[in-house]
Length: 145
Image 1 (cartoon, rainbow, N blue to C red):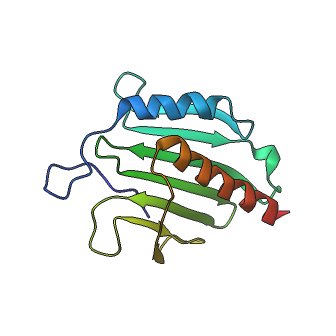
Image 2 (tube, rainbow, N blue to C red; image 1 turned 90 degrees about the vertical axis):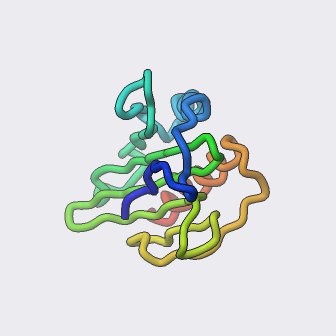
């Protein structure tokens, strides 16, 4: 399951919103669950913001966790949560983008992200979306213990 990508068609998500990515990075950098943030390809022209999560918060069976964030000037976004294990992956994704499979705002259900359901948020402000997603991540961590 990969995130939506930028293209130039009429149903495009548009170019990356670098200002919003930088805003989210500042909040992630102060989040106790996050150990590292990285812009890809770099901080000058970010297209993706990766947050590496603290492995000490997870049982030993989870070998790595991260959240990949893409935010676009159209206020579309993709926030992909991924847990790696020795034998498999557990993942889900919150998306807002033009598509043919569901409403513009939807959720790719765990554990594989292949089942999709429509989604509603009370606010699409980036910090509200961030808060909603990280509340879900914290609930996921609690459920693993």
